[in-house]
Image 1 (cartoon, helix red, strand yellow):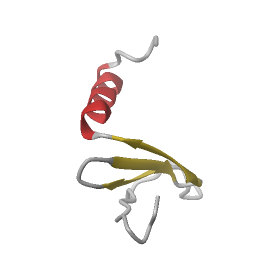
Image 2: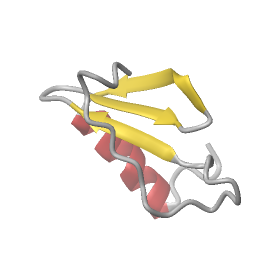
Image 3: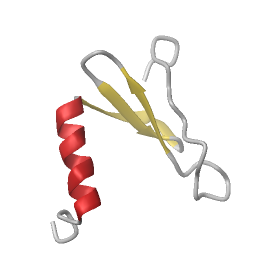
Image 4: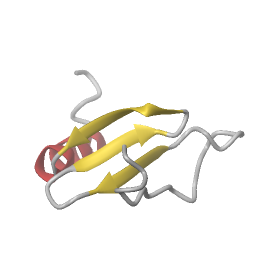
Length: 66
């Protein structure tokens, strides 16, 4: 992620004692950048529709046996 160009959203909640166990994201018009705070050099870039399907699958439990 190019931090100067993108506004990174950092969650206020983290279940890691050191605060480094979280997912950070930045949104552009047609892309969403995701990364883990402890490995910021690795990022996933997706678009809203596939991310929405992934989140719905996670929330519904449909991906438990996948």
